[in-house]
Image 1 (tube, helix red, strand yellow):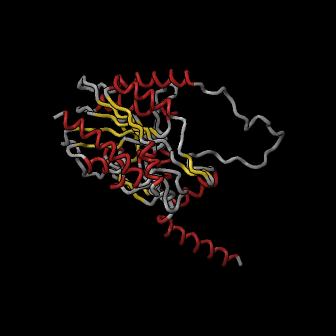
Image 2: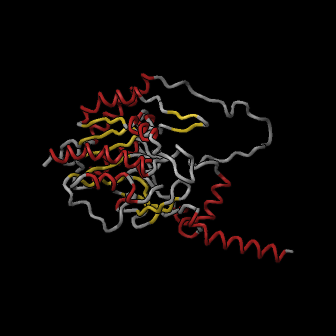
Image 3: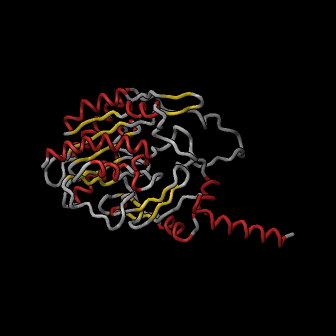
Length: 341
């Protein structure tokens, strides 16, 4: 009985080890980018994603996702930096269906460099812009921010402080991805890494443990934080050539969405779009509201978010959503690149 149990365990593990790349994401090593001042995936790595979409992302220079090691965009005249979180990073779609290459395919003589990272907010973006201005000889012509949550701009000012965890890199180097994923599933409850809580505990139960804390965030407080961050962005957008780069705010929240048996087409970002529109001129840029196009696409049956093995109308932008974003962005960049000649 014991021998059969051991043989079955070994055979089952071997089957999982062989087939896991079809179903399990990878865990590449990370490095600290001196140019960007943050931790990124190592250039030349391939980041495999499986839970939403089915793609492998090449990691290019400075940890930029979706760029091969031999690609050279420096000769193009109009240089654009794309900033955002995982929605702009685009690891759930193939490299040629990410926002940056789709935009480049629609407009000539424009290089779009993807600096988006999962979980980033405006503190991370502004910090990296400042570092890149200090470490690079050539300034950006434009900065593009894909905004899916207005909360990412309405936060207190903080300076990111990141470092490479050698232990995590050693684990990523030697441990198979399926074993890492198994441990993560046992210790956490979601992709964000929320720690799993035991269903039992010793001693009295703390009745306040799960209660909400803090006062509601009012509009004046949001406005103060947003204006402070926009002021920081204005200073950061002045590159090492003492000229201010153009700025594009693309507001593309996670709507429309499917919640239960309802389709939700509205969100609470009207005030945010209005403020961005008012401030964009002072930032040498524009604010573009992509909600109408997203809603129109969904109504036509071409949902901009969701994948075959994910949740319908939910999650990250799929190739259709990326195409909507890239087409509108390319139109704006075309105007600017033509006028800069």
